[in-house]
Image (cartoon, rainbow, N blue to C red; front, side, top):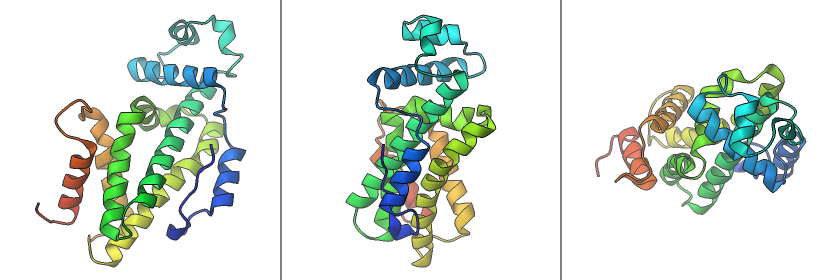
Length: 215
């Protein structure tokens, strides 16, 4: 999956981003492998990575244990594929939101917040696995994925830097970025997509608090 990382925030240009993602991609276009990756994400959320065995994965996927290794080398590669697919999806949603929103710091800030919350509706399991099982990745897997994570965080830092520059919000860019992402990430613990609040409403509330503005 090729991503367009917005160059307006000093990040990778289109060709550089595509080459970077393609070079480290472990998520291929096989529909079966993608299906297995999503099943694995659900099981990792339910059982935790450490407690999930290859036999459990194979049983949940409806295949023999040995057949699993036709698609993945080992459980570590499955974890890597889950996190990669989720991070790529988050980048796509965020970039699309930034392209479609108004070209103002406040609109971009709102677009990023809503996009982050939208990932909970489209790819919640992969999002949860990325948050709570990142520490289970081995060194090679972390090196493989760090570029995607950094690209996503850099999008946020660029949007926050613009908001700080025009006085929309105040604070240290790095700290504000961490606080905002921490608050948004924690919604996986309490946000119910079937509940009364939509991602749009939650994003609007967050931006109102950040900018100290009422409704």
